[in-house]
Image (cartoon, rainbow, N blue to C red; front, side, top):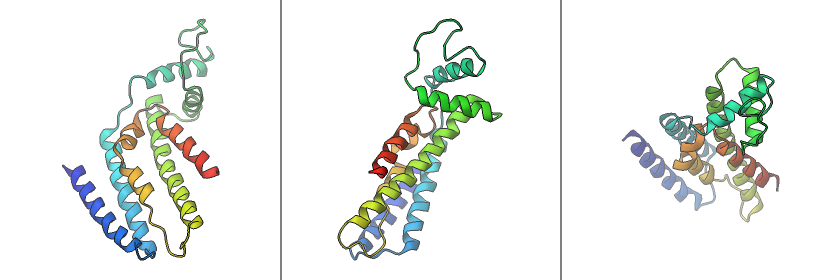
Length: 178
């Protein structure tokens, strides 16, 4: 119920700012308030939905074997390709080597970091697109980043321990590079 209330509040606030956007001038404070509200609501949804799914433990086992010198394998001596997220497995493995946490916790927090970084990249893409358009003398309204921050699928996959948030971040970084 709290989540629905936050969404209604966010959408009401968004509508007010969309009306201001028509005049091509939105204050910086309004943008900051909108992004802060969206990220706060998004992090609430992320925390409520947090769960490391069972498929992530496949990568954890491969990474654990790799860290213990057995190679990137499921079982020692059986050299079969069993992961489809090679880079994510290496990232989680390296983070597990560097940090004194359990792999599920590391993967969860890496996913949350990727979720937040993705919002920042979408914000940067929006800003670049706004500056390249006509009449870009005023402040832009961060609608895309705000909606991404509270979007159900994005918040649901922000703590799965899988590479979903990371891949989304890489795609958006590629878009920003264009």
